[in-house]
Image 1 (cartoon, rainbow, N blue to C red):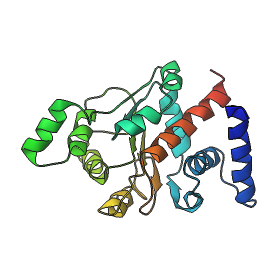
Image 2: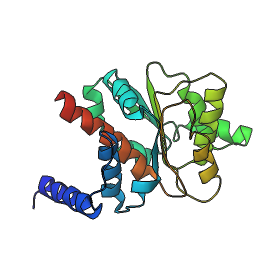
Image 3: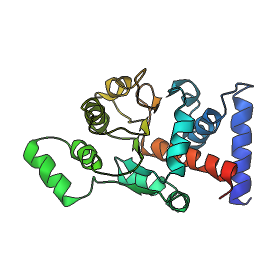
Amino acid sequence: MKPQEIEKQSFAIITRELAGRTFPKGVDEVVKRVIHTTADFDYADTLCFSPGAIERALQALRAGATVVTDTNMALSGISKGTLAKLGGQACCFMAEPAVAQEAGQRGVTRAVVSMERAVDLTGPTIFAIGNAPTALIRLHELIEEGRVRPALVIGVPVGFVNVVEAKELFLGGDTPYIIARGRKGGSNVAAAIVNALLYQLVRRDGF
């Protein structure tokens, strides 16, 4: 089978196994893309979307948004070619020597320093956090301090320490978000959500 046929059949299986369960337009594509990436149907229940998050995200992407990730793995999984067609880019500061040096001097994680570096970016910004709860916590602080106003926060870090608490900071807040409640998530999930948004634009706008 060709790759397109495999993907088409996979999504057909996902739709069938959801047993008639439906989601709003835009949300449906994200939920199914995450299930396709993970083979985990729990995301149908744990993915949380703030009101209007999908349209806010699509508007930002149309305007050439920068996507900031907390891992190079998430960065590598994002369809950067599609993003570039919209005038956008994706970046990750985690591997920069200056970030590691500052983190060591301050006794904080590189994820914390990376979020602080992202404050200097111009234009609409989407944060895709799939690994470090400290990134999500620091990002929330930066928002509270008025230093950054994300177009969307994708909060899907995976793990056991401070993961649930970091995600809960955003639920019900004013910042647009897509959050995976609980311990599950990962860099692959963060990238899948970004790609699900990008692929919606491919279908809607035909670029």
